[in-house]
Image 1 (cartoon, rainbow, N blue to C red):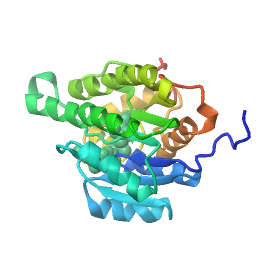
Image 2 (image 1 turned 120 degrees about the horizontal axis):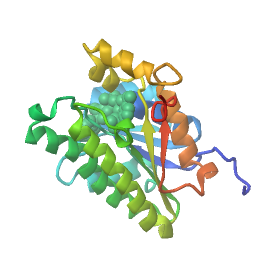
Image 3 (image 1 turned 135 degrees about the horizontal axis):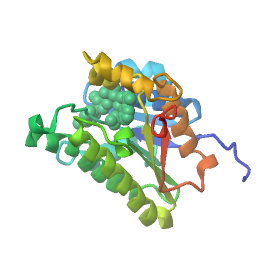
Image 4 (image 1 turned 90 degrees about the vertical axis):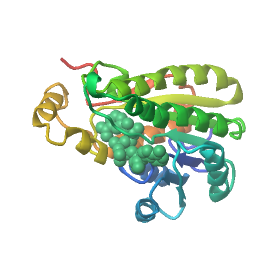
Length: 253
Ligand code: NAD
């Protein structure tokens, strides 16, 4: 290991989409604690304003919808201005859930979920990679639906499975530019999205816990500390892979 603190993110300039709540906020807190400057993006100014004091003094808010036309280039440029230099870490975390049976999933549901997760992450990754300057990291927030089959989430599964292909393709293409690309596949982690997905469905909640060897939901900080590791020199030889953080849910019986 070179003369660095292996898990330090000091000097990193990070853009986290959907960074004002849930897993994005936890990653922002953990990366800031590891030394990074963090720009949190989201659509609601009041949510971001409430998040900033929870993150720390090197945190900045950047309001914007990642799916809006022209948003990716503008968000990456503005994030660099706020952070004091081009961003060197992009975390494609913004997401929307859609739990419906196939027959009830509309074209607009499907296109909307794909647009938020896949289209926006593609454009943001293209914009951010261009400025990373030889030492960059891109993370995709994947899911258990990237790894195992689940009913009533066809659009979400398609989007999260696409992340694995994008991770491998970009890792292979961008290694020559000094950019590492990885995915985190959270299991079931306590967050606003999980509460929405489980609302009124106690049987689903019981099934999840029964098939999770560690027998509990994850804590958002479990994702935050994984992001720190993947962005730090400790992960300098790790690219193109997906890390499940799931209490064993993806391998449990
Ligand atoms: P969350 O709802 O708190 O976070 C999603 C964030 O994305 C929100 O802040 C939301 O406002 C933002 N967002 C949505 N659409 C946006 C847009 N068009 N532009 C900008 N921001 C937008 O839920 P979470 O659980 O923290 O989810 C974060 C990510 O982790 C998502 O990609 C989700 O799919 C993924 N994930 C979560 C879990 C879990 O158990 N919580 C499991 C697997 C994957």
